[in-house]
Amino acid sequence: MTKADIISEVFDKVGLPKQDAEELVEMILDTIKLTLKEGETVKLSGFGNFVVRQKRSRKGRNPKTGQEIEITPRSVVSFRPSMIFKDHVIETDSATDGAVPAGQPAE
Amino acid sequence: MTKADIISEVFDKVGLPKQDAEELVEMILDTIKLTLKEGETVKLSGFGNFVVRQKRSRKGRNPKTGQEIEITPRSVVSFRPSMIFKDHVIETDSATDGAVPAGQPAE
DNA sequence: TGTTTATGACCAAGGCGGACATCATCTCAG
DNA sequence: CTGAGATGATGTCCGCCTTGGTCATAAACA
Image (tube, rainbow over all chains, first blue to last red; front, side, top):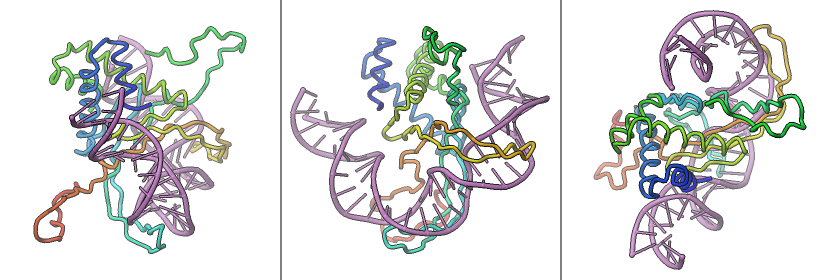
């Protein structure tokens, strides 16, 4: 799934014009992006947290030459998924009961 | 920053009613969530990819009791940020000296 | 819709950073 | 007000991470 698919989804569900939906999606992503670039954590309840972590200098290597190099300290973005993603497929009790909407009504 | 802040951002920029904005943001997140739950990768160009990885069984332990346990195989969601998050400020033609201005960007 | 552009995947090898198991309780986001 | 989520403690091993040319594809453009 790509960005375009999400846009189509918005278009489909809300009826928002494609270009508006696109602008909207981009804006949301951009907002998150900018926030992270400022080093601030983005908490999305029911989804996950984007955390900016400071990595110290460490030793890496050029995989091509094998040359050992110094990886400079840097900020990295780490995503910590909400527990909703924990793949507990909660089997209700009987496998025969397929009528249960497999999964996540919690919202 | 939380979800509410993003909603406010949408409200501010687009003028969409708060509740509509909220519904929209939730819908987008939900779409991503469901896609990931199906094991499909979500690619957001210019932002990052959400990848579902299959983790094999491994040994862990109960940090409370120290009891060694078997961690069951499971799916985990991994986020791989786009390279735009790489904090290299790529100056295309930054003038005369090739020297990096000490302590200018980064954080 | 078709074409162009640019973002990103890939792959090599090896070392080590850190993510993650559990579970009760408190905090704060919704 | 409610409940989702953070926290913490410890040891293990997973996979991230480096470069860079080239190719695939999403996105931007017409």
